[in-house]
Length: 245
Ligand code: SF4
Image (cartoon, rainbow, N blue to C red; front, side):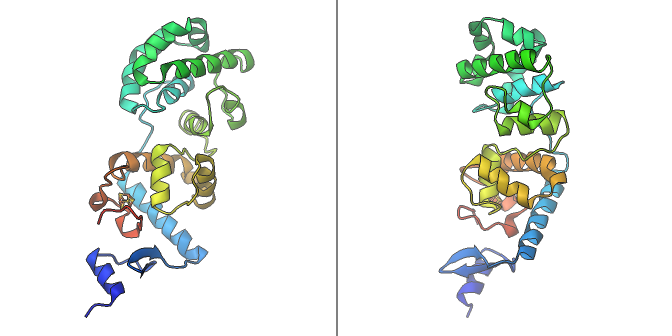
């Protein structure tokens, strides 16, 4: 006869010694910091194996294009943004170009990405400040990027990591938010606190690649509604409540 614990372990084909079963729930055992570091290392290793070439999916050829594309990507798919920016980047080549048109014209050019009025305000306000305060170039420092209207840490981290190759933080978008909580890398609920938690357990030289890998993993496998757990490379070390066995 199987004990309750073995029953659950066998039922889900689970062999992770860092987990235990309490009242039918799969839970992490009380872990030492060494165990936790080991688990994080295993997650990083598996993400690296699964997504060795993960990179930003937004097409761009300079920091300004990436900044504009990232602003447009809020509540919109990268595919849609790439379609819109194909023409947009031909028409607008400098901060002056974006700042100089009537808002209605830019709104029309980015309409299909959604929230086009707010995005127009952000892009034009950002481009005006880049012109007036930063000599026409996108700043490559977190503190300065955060001064730009409509630019929060997520956008700043994308621009710094991808365009400037600077690991200033970890991108916490909707995918990183969901996946890092499912993997119990954080229990925080705001993007700011989740980023802070992740920065404490992920080595700094992995921040950029980890962001891309988590985004790709969330988009392709660890989906919001129906995670594809049977195909997941970190399945055996995941104990998310909504995991699909
Ligand atoms: S096992 Fe499922 S819930 Fe856990 S990380 Fe993988 S896809 Fe997400």
